[in-house]
Length: 374
Image (cartoon, rainbow, N blue to C red; front, side, top):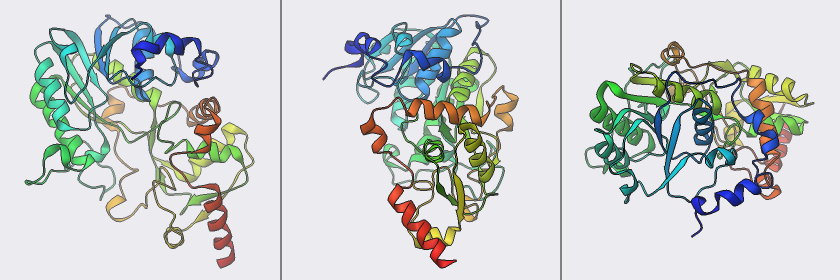
């Protein structure tokens, strides 16, 4: 099997064709010059080639840090290929082969890739005496539910059932158990970051990308429920840069919700439309009608869940602690423009098969049914 380590020079040469055109990398980078860190660090990134990883690599290298990434060597980063020429590539497998990490020391670890507790258990056991700080990228899915507004880091997390093997449990409880392993190994030097929906250039899920791409296409857009429904997300660059700054700084241990500020869904769509200069119009279709038409929250209506019952707080999580610790947010208009610019660098085949969002024919069908029912 061909690995990234074997082919990275070839990808630098062909980056424009591969969706990482060097001419547009500036748009995908930091909102401002990264600047030098107070002290260069040796940072190990577990993962690093998907979505937030490349943004972390670029920002950390720009700040003068020495970066190692540990991957299986199978995934090419979507952009910043020249930066990946400047980092150490360690090849292994979180499930079976950590030998590349043995006998090494780093100042900090950023764990992007673990969603299974056994992965965190094994890496923290190996690295606990060789690393100062360990940051685990968790998820707000770690919470037991979203039955209240303003959930902070002290809210109850999901639990694995007694008869459930920890790697076989649900995604949220697994993330919560991963956090516990990090705390057990690193104590006050463990940092658990719980993002919500991560958005922006490099999104490999299309869960938010659907909206700027759809708005940019113009015409009548089916929008979920009402314009005042809450929405919350965080730009991958804001999250990644803040993560790097967290591991640079002693005394930042603890747990942080790291999604964005709460916004109304209508305001989000209007900001996207304004940023793109699009001629889209929005038709707000009630939850009950969408259910009848089998339009699913989150999968079809991405970045949206009904603001009621067990999901009332999902897009209204408190990020006060993260903001106090330095998390900042760029204008959503910038994210929308940059996301569409990045999307347009992808192949026609990739753009023809989005991984989330409402298919165009289904949207037309549901809008017609809604207007007929009015």
